[in-house]
Image 1 (cartoon, rainbow, N blue to C red):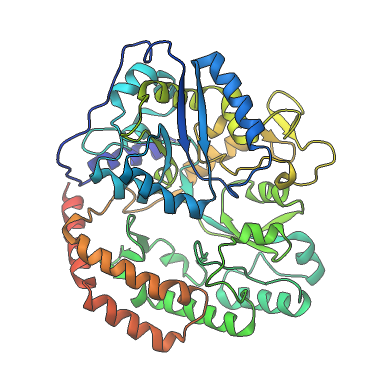
Image 2: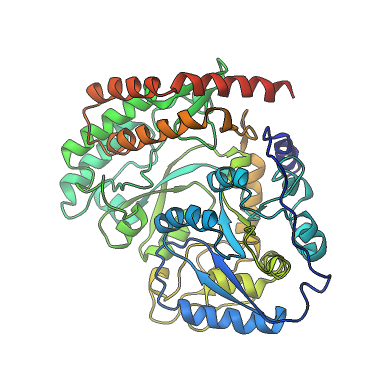
Length: 498
């Protein structure tokens, strides 16, 4: 863990310059007095439609009224709706006191002064947070010495894994452990297409189309690093040059497989338009393959959620990346009317086991049953977590994940495995490099429009790759691709020198 933290602290060297600084609107040390307040929370959930959401809100508010003399008003849409609504809410100054944030949300909205600085609030009302999160991890969140976001305390290493329904693996004798190339994975999809005509071998959608890292030589697994904050730009650690994915042979090979899979019927026909993610498709027995993070015991979580056993196939080597910490954060918007009480609430999400499990798991006796002090199981008659009335999928998106109850099918040492996972993650070269888009923001806006035109259809195999790629590259270059790359390489050299 010391190695993890040593790497993360370098993130405080981010190269951003912003004019001015928001001032925290601190009240007195009592947290704004004893006045009862309503805090507004906005964060995404898996479905945005939990049957027992109101019941859970009532229990949360009953507890918060006694603890902090406040209540919460929660708006928690599905992921697609959340990402559409949040920029509009921030731009309009809508009153909010807690929001979920990731890298793109944060760095797209920080120049617009959308977030309150948190350092004074942390010192007054967030002492539990400072005692829980390693100080260097907190430091890694700062921009020019100021804290605007707090990371969920969770795994920091990141990897990707393929997970398969166990009954399908056994029934069709699928060699999932050795399926670590596109050709081998193609064989599995072909078998499922033939043997399971009522299922889609590989489900895709128009929002979060999974691109799995197959056919990468071991020595090149960490060669190309994504430049966070922009889509489809990669840094070649061997040449120290920036590449766009449209010019990478590995990506073009992948697109050609997608084109083949689309024509062969391995991909759902509505992939380019549907919002339904793999998880939801698997939940409805439309597919038996899910791409998820390669964290310890992910297959157990899937099995619990989907009501049928899943097993792990090929998984990428975990990498240690500051962006993994920034993938799940929270912030207090500048529009907050009660920042002191908001920080007190956030402090409890990192320190209060009862409260965080109300948010994550729901109401004891209704949405789960306790086995012992730290272990829970599904209620009587419920066979999968998605049917228990409340399954928001926010266990890694909020507060302190290490306070979450363990499910009965999970190992008692799960959280120790997570710490080992972090410690063994391979360090990557650009783990804390963040690109300042301001000098080329006009070109980036144009590039994003072209991305929308080409990337989704390429990822679902709906285009002729040989014809589309030259058109894609031509449009990118005509709209500033080379200027963006030159600016990235310039900033990288400055960052490296520091």
